[in-house]
Image (cartoon, rainbow, N blue to C red; front, side, top):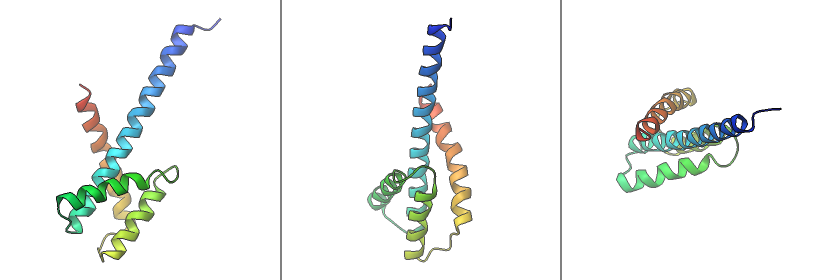
Length: 107
């Protein structure tokens, strides 16, 4: 017979990890929004609004493609010299930053 306590602990740990990853991805997207907002020359309030728009853009579909589509359109509208590869590299960098920030905050 399976150990019910062990199974419940595993489920709780999995739920916690899923929640932490969701928070990390949202934080990563917000950081990406601030990074691009700075390139666009947005003031602090406009950069905050833009960063939130980037976070919400990730709710359209699983994965990063919805965020990439949104920011690439914005990059084009603002005539920025940022490639899709640059965005993907920045996403990779910022997910590590976001995970570290969340880990630091939880201690």
